[in-house]
Length: 103
Image (cartoon, rainbow, N blue to C red; front, side, top):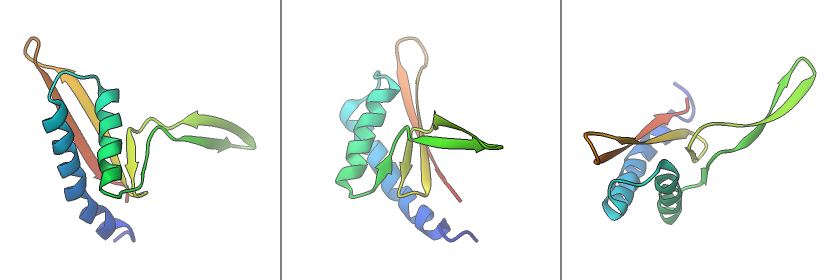
């Protein structure tokens, strides 16, 4: 088992609760970046360290290039969150968050 597995598993309940709180407060109909911004703040209120849209250096055979990673939020260095906001049945919008342990 990976060293961060237990930590990541323990965080998922808190992350899901934070996402539910954001959705309760903001409701449906906003774009993904707004939900992401709110979720970052909610996770911060819960004292979780979060990173979003990080830029990293990719190296290949002596060449280096800075690229932004395309994840929404990385929590405590071990759980990736990918938020989705999509149109469903006319004007109604659904929001979903999936949290995957990075192990």
